[in-house]
Amino acid sequence: MNRASLIFAALLAVLVPLSLLAGRVWIAPWGAGGAAGPANAALILAELRLPRAALAIVIGAGLGAAGAAMQGYLRNPLADPGLFGIAPMAALGAVASFWAAPLLPPAIAAWSLPVMALAGAGLGMAGLALIAGRTASDAAGGAGGGIALFTLAGLMLASLAGALTALAITLAPNPFALSEIVMWLNGALTDRSWREVAIAAPLTAAGIAALALAARSLDALTLGEEAARSLGVEPARLLALLVTGVGLTVGAGVAVAGIIGFVGLVVPHLVRPLTDRLPSRLILPSALAGACLVLAADSIVRVLPLVTELRLGIALSLIGAPFFGWLLLRMRKGRL
Amino acid sequence: MLAADNLTVTRGGRVVVDGLTAALEPGRITAIVGPNGAGKSSLLLALAGLLVPAGGAVTLDGGPLAALSPRVRAQTIGYLPQSPDIAWDVAVESLVALGRLPWRDRGTDHIAAALAALDCEALRHRPVSRLSGGERARVLLARVLAGTPRWILADEPLAALDLAHQLALIAHLKTCAHREDGTGQGVVVVLHDLAIAMNHADHVLVLKDGRLIAEGPPRDALQPEAIARAWGVTARWLGTPGRMGLVTGD
Image (cartoon, rainbow over all chains, first blue to last red; front, side, top):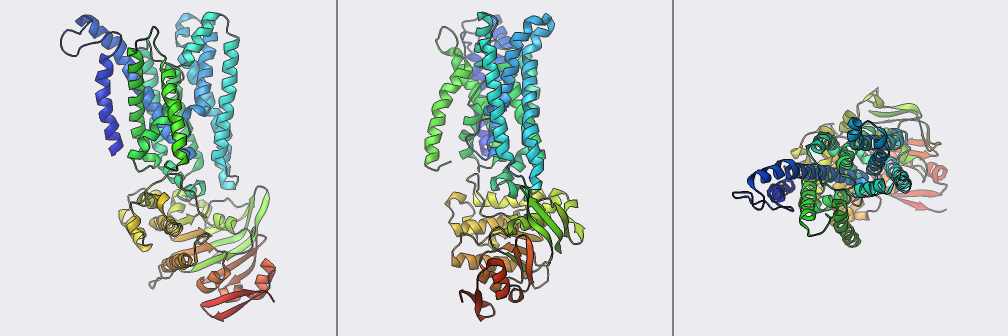
């Protein structure tokens, strides 16, 4: 545990109880459950607020860790795990499920969204590994450029998935399906239950574990691809761990909450100055900081006095886009 | 002994090292020289085990280098690329500590020794973005030394250094190679400056078009005839051994 991890773990410990109390119905921590009666308060906590907080933590942790690892792999502080094919492919899978669900028996249809989103993420991972993996293994033969190809393959997959998603939207069978799809694409944690937690938590944990295994190899990449290989890094193994880790964390997030942008981009930047800047020191604190950010943002959208709740994905992009601009300005001054 | 045995390397379909055979001894500085595009860097990468040969083999102490696991190879051979970008603005100590990655230990003593050997102790906590060119070159070499490799392979470590820093870095490499007790590391450097090769290397390989056209102690390998053949330049040496200067022109 380094300093940054301790800071964000402490912050998370403060945010969790706050987030449980906040919402349309405020629950007073002392005594009778505030505006709601004690029985209602217990129900709201156990069935609404707790799973929602757990899900925010799981998704934020996954996105934060994936962002830290992705920036380390691409040696680029502007890399966002959402940009590289996996999240758009997962979203495409989810959108496809809105088409498929009416054709399936109800028992299966209930699971079609997360399952198809995960299948989309899996397809994205396979596509990335297939294209970029060729050069990763060929790198020893002198082809090189494995990481550049990874970036291009990711962007290619992302734009393909984006186009197919747009196609699915324009061909939506009815206005109701259309609004379902559009709403869902702007991620949110509204009305989620323990079922979503049960889907996302194990996958995210496995993903973060894969990224942790890649951590020291990512450090070696600080010196470039050839120096990393001279330090014993095996490019094909690193690529496999990275694609698995990012695929599981981002895929699980999209499967249960839709697209939540900017967390993976922004969080490593908040954490980096608190560490010695090596990618390995960033992964755990970025997971914790991501959990804090998503939990805080989700609590805020819940209490904003709006007629319909602001979608979490929109809220985070509203914060994220100006931050991105500030980042670019700061980078021009060479402070990254 | 690190040796190339009828080594052929292709990159992007082009033959860059062409059936080259050479044996490199530990405990001395071997300079690889040659005109641009002669295949120096590719030869060095192949000797480091980072390029798979299209033909022939690289052997380490008689056994094929390719048979070593990447980790054991990394423990044995340290490779210093030509002025690499450092992706993150880490502190000098963290950067040097990367040299211990193949050993999976903290290696605190080795890191301290490497920092000391290259006079980098005062820089320990400085971010790499605030290093001068000379400091940066020393820190990058310290990263290789921290891994305590038996072989140090460096691609143009003197490029972009001023004269004083070139001499200082060469002096550091000499201390690595020349040890009284015979445990010196094998140092292989790609060089452009023939005078440095002449005055400081123990052994020189002259490459042209991927082939070895001269090899031996610097005074033998860097004869004016070899220089004319490799670079197409008329030149002669002036001065006394260890202080030779190259004069070009007729």
